[in-house]
Image (cartoon, rainbow, N blue to C red; front, side, top):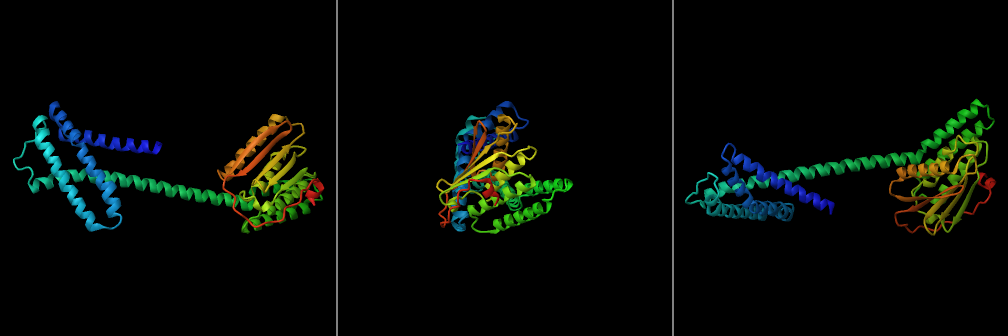
Length: 361
């Protein structure tokens, strides 16, 4: 409706400008009654010009010229050219010039072929101006669409690069390893090996086709293992898988990205939150319950959850539906697939893991 209203206003503005503009040109320097006369002329003959212009622009060109029926297009174009010119001359000489002061004399044989062609050239001028304006606008819209496609492609490439490399996870690991080196931690070598192994597997996973969700679960487990080494504490993470995880068609690495973001949000805290990750192959959704019992207030934890959800939405745009529910000890992030799930081959369900030690192992 908004597009149609905008189109109507554009067309109305074009014809109003045409009437006022040519009235000013034809009566410049004349008395006020001549202004009124030419304004009446262009206002009364406006339906003729509009009909002629729209028949050419929206009937002849789409139906004949664009389909390369050039002889038929030329014949109909000349017929409209001559017919509307005759109609304009009849209306002008038999009515307008007799009743409105325009300074134009009425010719005796105004319907001669030469007069009709000369008058038709004026009608043709407005047709060409309209087509030129329409062509410029279509070119402008096409250029904008091209730029949007390029921008969308660049955005998609950036998102794919972020998904493949996980730069924030890598920087977090490197910063943590630097700290471990400063503290002369004996786990530095193990942390470097785990970081390299995890990054390699993430890149390999992004080259796989199809990307199965149970492989991403394994990557999340290795991320938990890495965090347990660099934080020198074991995150309390539990997985609950129902149905076939191969039926989960969420965008690749979305669970990995979410868990990584949560760990990084709490990197300055002495303890990490407890995470309960529920993935359902039946409903094609995952739920990550974040429970934190440290010194941080509930409002702060909820605010961190909100910030995390907004950041995750910026990564995946409208490909998923992300919602959040708060509870006394934190929040739950629910991720659903917006696209209809495709049928996938059956994959063995991942076992439910209830202990932190099992997650690390």
